[in-house]
Length: 265
Ligand code: NAD
Ligand code: 0WE
Image (tube, rainbow, N blue to C red; front, side):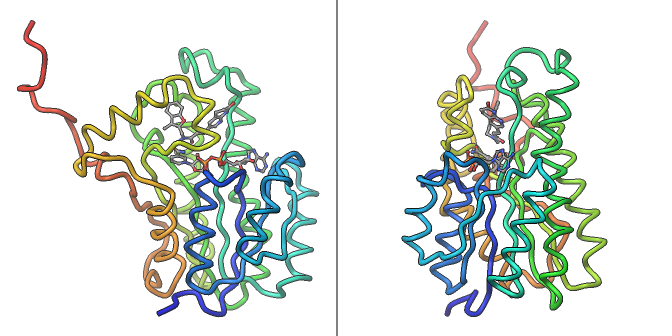
């Protein structure tokens, strides 16, 4: 059974074929959704266009989410192209590289503001712009990470931004619930993507988590895609304001390995 037949989805955050948003796009396409893509910087057009072609996507627009005029323009174009939409996917984040190294206490005012603007406020702005295109209800999904609730080395200001993002999911869900619009987040375990490749030691983090997570492995873009599919389809009709973990169970662990495994000192 196709879960998204007749549904229209606008997806923000595809950079290349490794993007989590691309995993979500593939799952949605497989289930009959009509898709539109928006990417963040002009240089990504040559990466995103071929992917759009692969899934018969005719709507591909640039939008820098720090710019109100870009957001207004992309939703004007979406209204012209789709009329209404059913699904909004927010899969983007950014903090200046220097803020993801060293001590969180050194975070600059400008780095903090930019990380929260792109990674958290943008969800509020996109949902506000999408609301008029969802008069019959809809579903919004965003991407978060466990560093919002526990300290993960070097995640730093991104952890603070993800905490703000998750709180925003709850406030948006309360605001938009009466209109039939659901808002949820997926908290994914570490996945090798373009954003992750800019992070020192990321391969080691993948190894660390994959060895200790209850499922003894890492997760992939396809598994996140299938969870987004469930949340955005009628299967998720009773769920809003929630954070769903797709992390091989890592977040349930209070002490990730037993004392027997510790080195004798
Ligand atoms: P990615 O690099 O493929 O995607 C990040 C996207 O953010 C890119 O497409 C980039 O163009 C976009 N972006 C950055 N600044 C922007 C701006 N000003 N305007 C518009 N777009 C902008 O990496 P990804 O790992 O697929 O990241 C997608 C989401 O998943 C992010 O929210 C990230 O925090 C989250 N996430 C990633 C992981 C992981 O380990 N990769 C784990 C959990 C959550
Ligand atoms: O949300 C993310 C990554 C977000 C991210 C990554 C970069 C790298 C390049 C945001 N901004 C930038 N800016 C850059 O200049 N993840 C969940 C993946 C991730 O990033 C980490 C992680 C994990 C996991 C950073 C430090 C520690 C763990």
